[in-house]
Image (tube, rainbow, N blue to C red):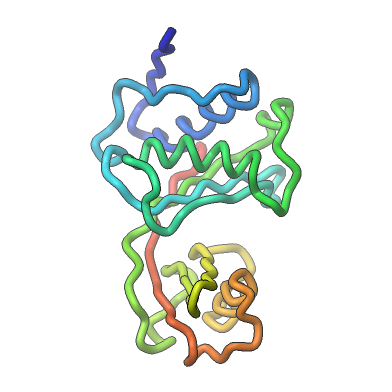
Length: 181
């Protein structure tokens, strides 16, 4: 039996992520998509879901390029993955949900950066790439205030610790961030 989920456009993505987590953690089932999906969430885009518990990161998973047929599907998939598959944390338990705050980021298409002066950690996320190794850092993260720090973290994520910035392919992107109210 398909359960209907009614979600307003305002707050659609964090509400959908929360419903997906409630369904998955409570019943171990992936929820069906709602029948009414706002136009903005029908297209394709890279997408991240971040979970915070009492102000601390509890899980974050996403893709910089779309991996599902719609943003709405990305929300459901990445919410479940952020709660259950982030290798930095144990899986989220159902009883933790009341303390979990959700933010979701829709990513713009990455664009190449020719000069580090084109970066701004408050405005742009960054992707560093060398061969098969890639690291991504979302924009406007607490404690990340300089381009150098942003690149350093992205390089660590990619395992590119000692590679000079000029030997990397660097991309930037913007996000549209939605948070629970």
